Length: 109
Figure 1 (tube, rainbow, N blue to C red):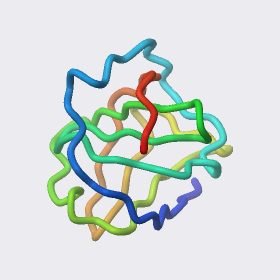
Figure 2: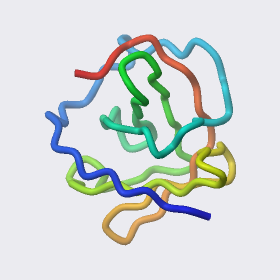
Figure 3: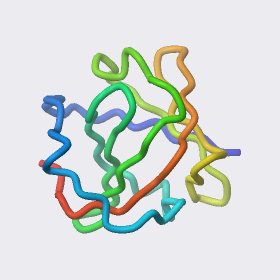
């Protein structure tokens, strides 16, 4: 299992649920080493961006408190792929299991 750390400074304003409409439950994010942006939606969800066109809504199995204040976020992966139900988001000593992964249209800024 590999873990990537994403050290990216973003305006971390919460995204609204209305702006995020999942297209398809894909269950994985390929090319995890290309994740270049992330944004917190709430304690249960965040969005990862892989390049300019691929955005993924990640839902956690249970609330992941404290994500809003994190500067470094790590994500576990296997074979450069993040899998729902298996991998986790890690930050500041917290480990949050990923329940679902869906593609979304809304680009991150």
